[in-house]
Image (cartoon, rainbow, N blue to C red; front, side, top):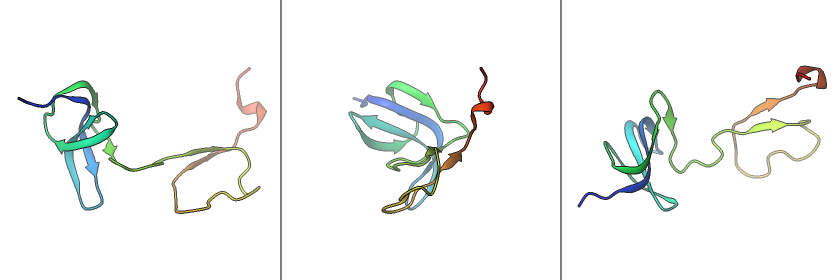
Length: 92
């Protein structure tokens, strides 16, 4: 019997610690359980033309507010986009 996964993210470019390959990412419960092709899933998301980073945490962060007013990076590293807006930038 073919296993059915909770969620399959398909048609993406999967980036792992050792490779970059076109593949589907299958999830059961809260865990990534398989990488492959044409995996059956209860829910399917299309990742065509996108990179999929299974297991990556904090692949992107949007920062709001002043940068440099205190410790920003305590451990490790992260990527992010700093958004600085004034009140006049927002529509009324």
